[in-house]
Length: 336
Image (cartoon, rainbow, N blue to C red; front, side):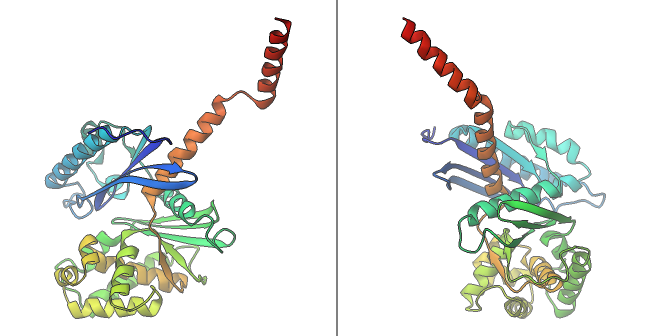
């Protein structure tokens, strides 16, 4: 099916994440993002590394099948511009340089392997664009957190401007596989997972400060917030994070956590994600983590929109030149 052409240009963003591949199709209408399609498929790249650090064959087959489906969807929507980015797992994979050309053939579009700084920039752009105009959100410093499958990005900014980006090679999948590999969740393993996270985040220049809020632009934060609200615990403050830890310990196993809460089924490595979030909150002094339904893909759509606007401006003649041309045309018309 060919989808109808919208009045405003349509863009698409594809994120080849460490756990899932995701596609957004949308347009900017009167300064607001309108999502027209959103697809997600779990391919579990970060959980599929062989002993030598290569992606296993099964994960690559899943990924290529997903990309073929995405290619058909992109053909149907016919966006004006598409940006496809691959994140931490494909940066780390030993056979990534072999897999990426096959992935490009399956998707029929070029794939950009981005570093943590660019991932953080796009995440922050998505959050800043979503929060723009919200009372009290445009002037002071803002801390944005993105806990991915294989990496974590922290971004400090003010309004639309970024001041600092830090990327850590630690994520929810890797933390879960390191401390809850057999699926069991016990107090000793959880405490070790938090200590490990704190040791990594202690390296950040943002540690030791006090933040009234940090904005979580990731599935981990959104899933934990949903569980906390479902259980009547309230917003994600330190005491609520500890209460969620107790809930997970009572469940005792990753499988039982997934069965207990629908949100946990969408974020299968939530135990590792919770441990990292607790470590980050403790190390950076965050009073509350606020979930934001925006992230890398939303940022990429806004980035495409802004690039299109800059290209349009660049294609226009300078104002003085245009005025002179108009005057000359009018003079020529008067002579006739």
